[in-house]
View 1 (cartoon, one colour):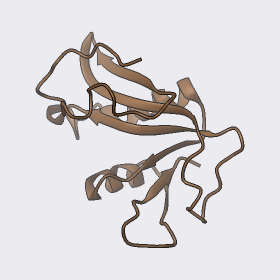
View 2 (tube, rainbow, N blue to C red; view 1 turned 45 degrees about the vertical axis):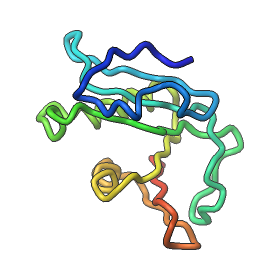
View 3 (cartoon, rainbow, N blue to C red; view 1 turned 90 degrees about the vertical axis):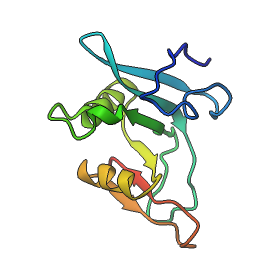
Length: 133
């Protein structure tokens, strides 16, 4: 079920509309003193990305962060909202947690968490898979 996200120009509206998620899916809002600072789309029990030969998906699946967005005005803030959001996801849904690269900026974020980068053996045209363990 898609959440009732309030329209907020500080978040990418394309990401947070109905119909773009795989199943099952869970949506999260991250709050600081009642103010929304981030959002995430989580795929619990995901079994995707078999083609990445340097990583094996556990039989029970993984917690996949399909999308995560921290408000642009709060990114790189001293409160480290992105790191806190990923830690909360890990605690709530369990390890291991995976995420696919979106671009060079997201690569830097996942690497800063100490996550392992896995490239697809077929190379170009495939995004980098990041894993928490």
